Each structure stands twice: as structure tokens, then as C-alpha cells.
Image (cartoon, rainbow, N blue to C red):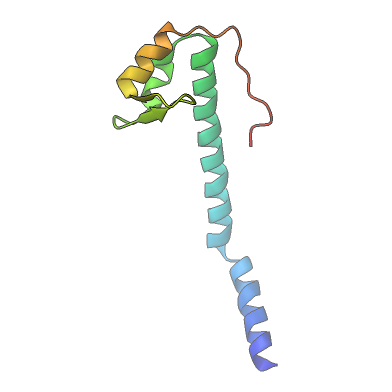
Length: 94
């Protein structure tokens, strides 16, 4: 019984720990950053301007299309320049 109370007390201390709230805040900031990058990608598609998304891609970026075509960053950006979207929207982004 004494060990149960110790664990309960430890749990209460950890839940009120400032590091716990910092972790939640950091998670929120990460979510905002990822959402901003998704918005940047969407803007690239809406304006048919792949230069907007280029900074988001790593130099070693590799893309595999649904048809199995594999391309690197330069090839993907070149293909994107020839592509025209009539519309682009995201739904229920989380």
C-alpha cells in the first residue's frame, strides 16, 4: 500500500512539473511549424510555383510517385514546373 501512495505522489509531481508543460508547448510549436510548411506547399501548388516549396526539400530528397517513378529534388521541381493545378485545397488538416 505504501508503494502505491509513493507512485501516486510521484505521478502528481510529474504532472505538475514545468517540463511537462514545456513539452506540451513545444509540441504546439512543432504543430504550428508543420502546418506552416503544409500551407507553403499548398501555396506552391495553388500558384503553380515550385520555387516556393524548394526550400522545404532536403538536397537528398527522393520522391516515389504512385506509378513507381522515382525522382530526386531537381527532377521533382522540374516536373512540378510543367504541372498546372486547376485547384488545390486541404481538408481537415491535423
